[in-house]
Image 1 (cartoon, rainbow, N blue to C red):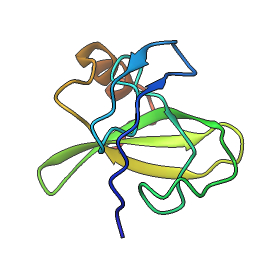
Image 2: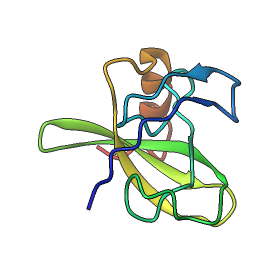
Image 3: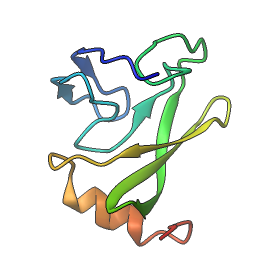
Length: 100
């Protein structure tokens, strides 16, 4: 079950200060994330690695970014936000790993 957790954070990839809204799970500038949850919002994952955005998909009319943890390899899709960098979205969508 999803647990809404409103937290601000500094992106470990690009250094951006991010204002969380309770649904924020990645940096809107570089789209990188952090492996902190087992179930969305629980903050129970012990890995703590950063998660690279490697691909995109569209599911049920919403675009999602695939993150993979650079420490343990865990993979998770997350919804994109209207605040996310269009430049980064285009960059990821043009990578060979892109999933439609």
